[in-house]
Amino acid sequence: MRAILVLLTLALPAVAQTLTFMKSFPGSVPPYVEINLQPDGKGEYKEDPKDENPVGFTLPKEDMDVLFGLAAKLDHFSRTLESGLKVANMGAKTFRWQEASKKQDAVFNYTEDPDGKVLWDWFERIADSERAHIDLERTVKFDKLGVQAAILRVEVLRDEKRWTAPQQYLPLLDRVAKNESYLHMARTRAAALADEIRKIKTQ
Image (cartoon, rainbow, N blue to C red):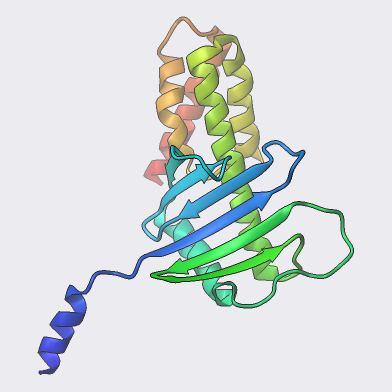
């Protein structure tokens, strides 16, 4: 009987889990950000809550373990994170945990919770990386003279150790490096950055 119960348990589908970050800050650029993460590393980035074609990306397992681990340390947002301190408005931020039909939100402007601050910074880094990817993709397709500046933006994230999933840039960097219609300096930087990212993949 016990063996049968174990087999039945293994046959049950995994409970869907989603970790979400939302920030609404009218007047900032962008005024809205939403990031949805799945345990398998699949993520979505939006700058409009009604966006039906979000930017997709994939984070490595070790990053997902950290992010979902932080959510667990924060009791999946079942407790208050708002510090209550009189600080400047930095936008209404929401952590959301969804598991099956259950949903739990924690809304804050600023938090002093150490785990909350680390998770907040993680999501800000993801948002910065996705905006840099969007900018690089736009310039590669429509603004060849702007590609150099877009690559520099990615390099700044690298230097500040604030990029996430750098492998997502590879197709665009390779396209620039191999196409003589782009400025020589942009092609050189693209090739060098692509080589660096490939070394990260093999470490």
